[in-house]
Amino acid sequence: MKIAELKFTGLAGGTVEGGWAEELKPADDVHTIVQVTTDDGLVGVGSAFTSSALVKAAAKLLSPFLIGERADEPARVSEKLRQNTFWQGRGGSVEHAISGIDIALWDLFGKITQQPVARLLGGIYRHRIKPYGSLLFDYPDALKEKLKQAVRRGFKAIKLGWTPFARVDSKLDELLVRTARETVGPDVEIMVDAGASDANWPHGFKWALRTAHMLKDYDITWFEEALLPDDIAGFAELRKLSPVPIATGEVFTRRQSFYPLFHQRAVDIVQPDCTKCGGLTEAWRIAWAAHEHQVQWVPHGWNTAVGLAADIQLSCAMPLARYVEFLTPSPYIDDLLLTPFRPDAEGFLTLPEKPGLGIDLNPEALKHYAASSGP
Image (cartoon, rainbow, N blue to C red; front, side, top):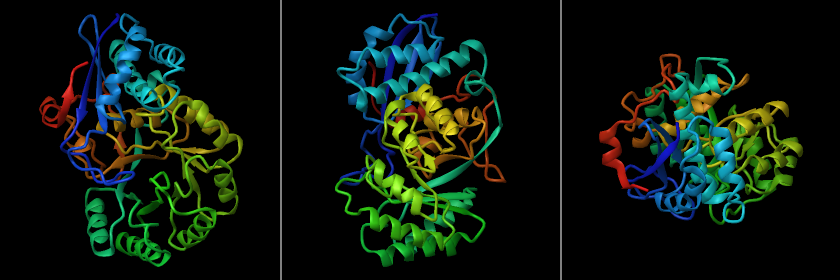
């Protein structure tokens, strides 16, 4: 069974708030659905965290190494793509494109073997995983309503991130965290994401340490992206002194980029995003490296329902896994599948039983949100 065709669909019209230098708008295309078709018509689905224009450009570079390849050897094939594009890739949008292709190849491998991806990744350790509802901070009144809605949607853990937290002053930061804790009560976990990968991040180590001490008073589960992503030495020092666990890693690509975090003991929690770090293959390698260095692995998942499905499969294939990120609310999570993921009464997600990623795209939703399609 050979790979015959690639198809890419950029998503637009439902892009959620959030951004880097400026706020994203609903019409912005920053996620791409990848479909890999075999010569006998079987289709695997993946997701890449970059625009369809960049994914299509990368695909022109990658296609000669992919078309005609076996459809049931995802790790070997995606590594072939990586090894043959070092001079024009080695991270960035090329690796993002490889990520989407790799996820689709694992979905194909599962469909070919009639097994869930979790079993093919080595075995199923659990059949449920806890999602944390991921949303952005807001000013107190609006924040309260966001949190109440997330709790009503069934989340027992919630992560809050980015503006206005860390963008005004420390008094507002504490007010926002206190408002969150008072709104959800003591039994809902709260994580805080400073978002230091934002453009022109204004803070340094001392701000991060002072803020970490403030967060301890509100029983915060972890403090994420408190420093510039590449400040490995700063993260190592912060982890030593912080009273709350320190997390980072969402912007890194390729497994080699994560090794300094482990070797320098820079994090308590590492957060690769399989839709840009290199796909399920690289995320699996990073997760095992974290396990061997006694670092908690939690997948970053500010992307699509396809990315969430991949995270659930990998989380259920790891001996230690506690959470997956669940962007909420988001049309690309809530509408893109025929059977959407929803937290159960205990706040957990169940591993799909069907082969591959265990999901079926909603063709009407994909058509509705399509910014562009075709190779």
